Length: 327
Image (cartoon, rainbow, N blue to C red; front, side, top):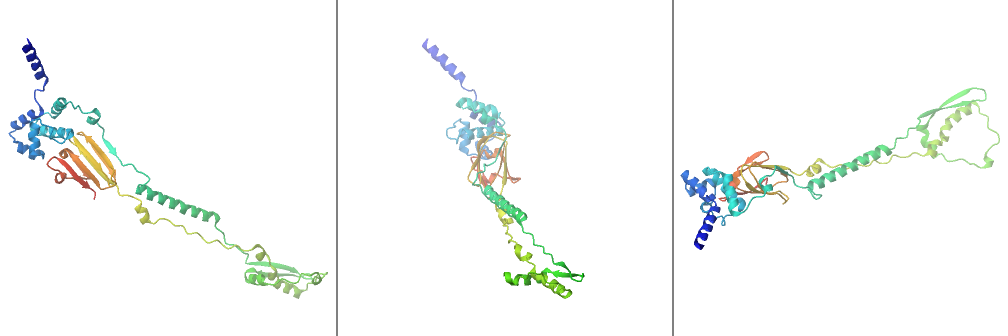
């Protein structure tokens, strides 16, 4: 009775195991295509030991779960095996169901965050402040600028003589201004002032007309204000403005297979570190140079500044590409 129960339990345990492990299916597919493990390792750019360990379902010696899925997917595609079914068997056997947010992710457009210490923001702020200062100086000059004092260059003086004749004398202020400024004041004592006004004759009228410019005090009383010196506005040169603009580069990656990607920009900030699925895209616009690490590099297409980048020279035998763009 006990033997019967034990046999029944063993049969039930065997039924719960997968019928075809991923390694077994891949091995059958390889043999069906008459390929050797050495040829598979060369086509997939993998170590020969990785291929044999995958066929033996010995995943403990492989780099990690993300890379294992990439190896299984690439191997299945090579030998004509359903990759998704193979990945599902692998996940079920090792009880590592991928998270939904990792399997289905929208296209990401990642732009580096700018801070107040960013050179672009710093120099742009300086340029804006300098421009505002220059505009303020120009506005102040236009508002408070002194206008030149316009003086009457000539005037006429009319004198009527005792005989009833009228004499018109022409007075030139510009010629006699200096004389009027240097004339000494006369004696203003009471004894010097006569009680009766002198009689103006024709001759004295002419003399009075000639002496009148010397008594024009309106020029000296009001004073002449000199124009203030103009302030010189300092504006940034084109070279200084050019330094405020940092070089921006454009990096585009399209994924045809599952890949692990890490991207670090020229400021040392890691802008991308994520698992990407087939059909995803990564667009990075920032300061070069960009340092990239791509797992399963055969499943990624990289374009820098609109030109496609050949990943083969940068890819090792583990199908991992490490390289730098924009140096």
